[in-house]
Image (cartoon, rainbow, N blue to C red; front, side, top):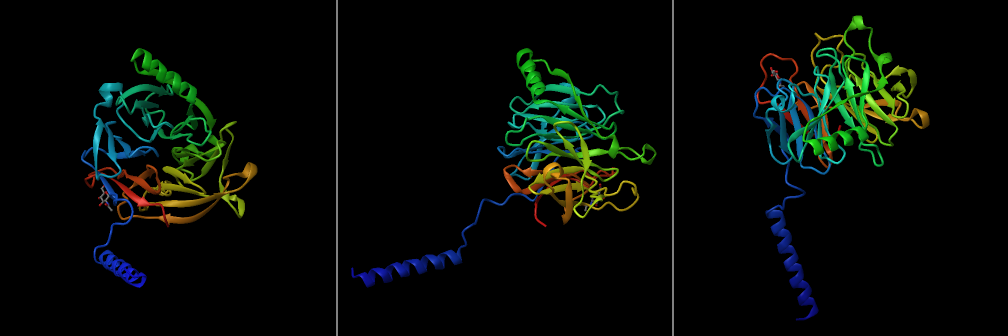
Length: 359
Ligand SMILES: *[C@@H]1O[C@H](CO)[C@@H](O)[C@H](O)[C@H]1NC(C)=O
């Protein structure tokens, strides 16, 4: 074959391939993920969600029964995973949740029960209970964060919406409790450690409860952020000495950033704050569901202490959303739990929304 003929035959082949490609489009990228995950349990009233970058599974749980559910990021239905946590380990209500840094343990905040229940993902059973010793109703263990930072400690912090203590599970105590369970087979009983005093950021008690809630570690290993739903403050906590400072606008140190965070998630340099009850001092006002995007800045001792509200993420699928987590390894998307907090007759099924973190 002559060169020109060869060239022409290649061109013909190329055009016929292009023609095929436009007639039958090839799918681009990975298969589409569901944009809504649904619970079959009509009593779920879910509040928390936990994911891990190395796992395709996500976990949620019921505030009314403590039942723990597991879903797969690629499938729309969420099933029960631990159906009798009360019989298993006395857990009867579940709020914020996180997975351990290695993804092998699931932490569940137990609200008015005053503790953090730790479950083994592999064995699907309870391994430890970290309690603060406060009688039922005097405490409200609401959200949990794990120090995942590169070179971070693996420590766990825990917000309490009634007492103004920020609680902690040091990584070493977690390891020792797990080792005890591995040796004895008995659920290890431990205490939560008092870490920081948050009372400076609470409202006057006559104005209502304190309501610390959303919580996340920040990159660098030095700070975490706590959201106070009553006063709206975002409070940076120094992990070395427990010192606290509220985030203010870049332009004026006295002008605080109000986020009323039920759930917090950080993707540098943005802090995502979920809360439907934007100003609890006006509880009769309409609930407005959205994620507030706060760009954090500041350097040196002011690191993460400056904030600008730069966006708002909304979805018609939100319904009194309480918190959010990355969609596994995909930090471009978030899972958002729709708790429907208002009570009464729920709109079934209960759901978790999957949304892109764009605005
Ligand atoms: C949210 O849930 C409530 C019931 O809890 C229901 O009445 C309402 O229609 C739901 N809203 C949306 C947008 O789904």
